[in-house]
Length: 517
Ligand code: NOJ
Image (cartoon, protein in one colour):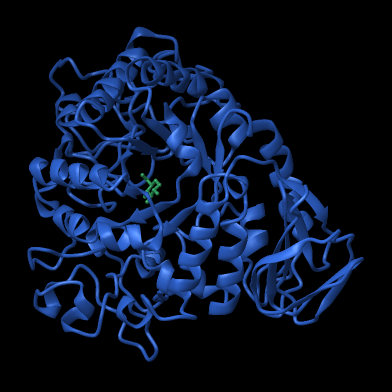
């Protein structure tokens, strides 16, 4: 069963930039295999790899040309099978990235659908009935193919939306209902793709834009129906495999749609940003900002109801970062990032570490967009392994590299940090070990707020027999607290435990354990 998920800590790999084993300047699957022990040493026991399928890479692989073929630059199917074997030998799991909502406009299905000749894929995408029919409320590509019709795109213009139908049909002449056989034929094709990979032993998928399938489906009712159908297939035929959604609405994603876990993403104005990403200078600084005066209530008001609603059905995934947003170092000092790691590793759910965050890699603002990265490009630079050629990422000539390396002063490397006491790497490693050693810090206990006040510090919460105190502010804070013999279990910074109070020093984290709880 999918029980393994509840005790996992994931490592996210952007394959282009992780490790280049064949000196072509781009990371590859064998490069991941070679580094499995590194990931295991950090304490992560599951990996999500961004798309590795054949693609023209207009959106870094989220524009899939062939769902069942590995992009040659990443290697071969044998390389993937070898990676899977080696991961499984080490007790590690591998998730691929499933892109269900759209394909590349170079995908064979789309080439046929746009051809103007009748083909079996005519209803696989969403075309208007004629090129003169272009309702402005839809994102349509107009007059660009032989077929007499305009087609809907999901993201960039090279990513035509697949046809899962419309929940509310507003233009019956070209929109299929989400209950139509045409829409469910697309679901069937999606399930075939999933089976192809699951039959090869993949442990599940991170699902791209999981909420994007059915159009005009504001409450996501029909979209959830599709995922529940997919989940039934998984439960029946692949009971160990998991689905993790890019959705950021646990109630809808986990409870209604049946995902095993859902990412807590950096949506504008939401709780994730209230914690980590409201930049200095904005009105509402984040809770973990330096010189912090953020508002923990802004996070809790959103998180608590979602947590309570979804906790019996699945997990919320905190992430240190991902390939779509500026790295944490753009918002927080290294020390504040350590406190944020302490928080993430003591919260319920299934946490994700983005490659390079374990050493505090920086966000580059000076790069020209590569493969549709735009502002995201600066978070996708090659992993910094050591001080050798290309920082150990690749043996290729520098001008062949996927993206330039960060040679700025103080730029971190694994070599400088792994095994070096006090480093951000070792700090995160100890936190992951702390989590792994204590099921209560994973998902064997609940989450209770002990002390949280709007615009005040500290934040105190309980996980089973543990209580965590976090004070990112510049001032020491003392709160009344009946410690009842509880002892320090882990800390960063400083603290004082008295019988009826706890003082948590400025910029500190403390975890205490109540032996008799
Ligand atoms: C979300 C992915 O994380 C992002 O990188 C991609 O560009 C879009 N979905 C489109 O697939």
